Length: 118
Image: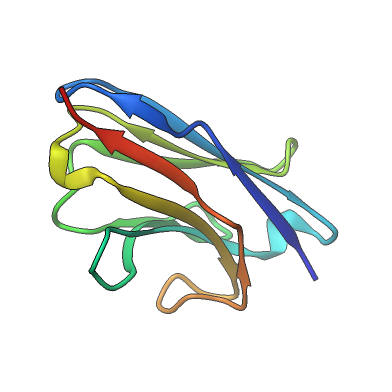
């Protein structure tokens, strides 16, 4: 099993930046594909970005060119750098670990809230 803890959320103005972190423990981090999902009020949870065990990345169309996912296997951490933030990026962001980037895995963090507002 793997435990996931997100951090780095907060309030930011439109056009600003945030970096989310997800620290993993309890298992071999490098063996997992890692993803970030988000859920806005009244909406379904959606994939934001994912990174495979071999560091191949994929992004939702809505964040391409603005967000960057990366991983540091030595630190058991996955990051989400978010630039040019928009109000529609407001959501709870969740970290996920699984075997593939095609679908979410079984392991979720508790989430971190990102609010983009002036």
